[in-house]
Length: 406
Image 1 (cartoon, rainbow, N blue to C red):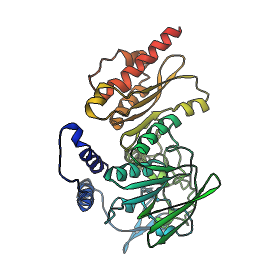
Image 2 (image 1 turned 90 degrees about the horizontal axis):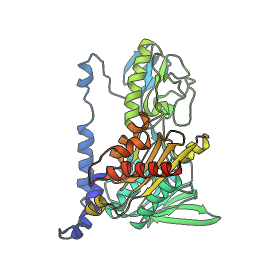
Image 3 (image 1 turned 135 degrees about the vertical axis):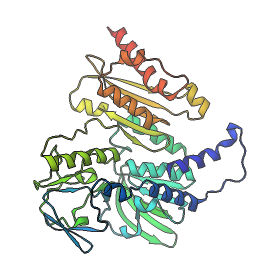
Image 4 (image 1 turned 90 degrees about the vertical axis):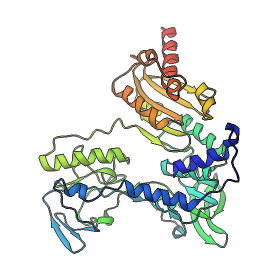
């Protein structure tokens, strides 16, 4: 969806690059059909598992007891069990919430919403807001925090918000939802902000306030499993409060990302079969939000470093006007690096970039290997590129400042 949205936005802007097209038409059914085709293409076939000796039973699984599972008409007993059943959207218990949809439904809507309210200013909400705005929808985001993307430092999040506002996205932040209602003109979202009552009506209202694993989806609520904030409470070995049951992915309630789920799945299987030998380490996971431009982070934010008492230096750079950005028309960029004050080791990076998902992996490797500002500054880079601006120049400037201070 994000790629289709970016193509649509670029097509609207094609004239300044020297290409003039006819009237621009959004073919929404093709967008949705392409999504279905790609999702289906990457769904693993049962044969890929049975060839390795695994038995696959497709159906809705329900716990009979802590060692027994029913699937369709089959009963399966096991000494060890791994719960890797994913998560479902969180839906607030508010009047009229049945008039809303979730992000799961928004991805495959049969009819394109010309007006869209998104409740939630986190990762999912911002990705949907960016994409549907690029498609041409009037998008309003309602969030409870005072700034979008609370996991990022406010200056990084604010930089992205201003870009989206410049494209027509409206934000109501610091809001408290009160109710939803469906009428002749669409779905109305009511909320209070700064002691004032507000209401926004749109074709669709999408609730995107997060995801959570729920035990009732597997009939596991009676097993006595301890729950954490987002999923099951697990040990570092991914063992739940019941010694023979492990969890992985969103069910484990750690970091809700596909690479983490695959990593935890391997570790949970290993520990369930061979004893608790391997600890899951998710302390350094690069993350990207697929807005346009992307916003990404890895390691410590400045806020987290300060809260933990870490002595650090911070380098920030607004990179608008770079040659690569001017040439490609992607002239938005902001970088924030956190360095250890004593040795100049890179501790964390945040960035707003059209290549954020790619560049943050370079930053993750630098953090993991303890790279210093001087090491980053010494590396020759490709010119012109996003990478030279987001890593080398920022580190070089920081190193020069530190050297001058000495």
